[in-house]
Image (tube, rainbow, N blue to C red):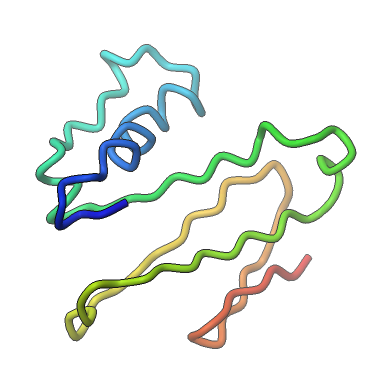
Length: 103
């Protein structure tokens, strides 16, 4: 993805299609009402779908690491949020740098 070069269509498409895929709701009903410009400037959301993994891995923990190379410093007071949706009860713990899951 490169937001400065307007290369973020996959990010936008994945975020816009999330509720349709996850909740199996008609796209017209579940439209997020976010334009590509809003996605870029206000709501850059990254959706990682790990449901299409091997059957052997479905009963194990999925380790997800997110690494980003930024072209500029992140503005002060910027916040990032992670939402994990699972069919298991989990507790997320963070030290401010890394997040881990406790059962």
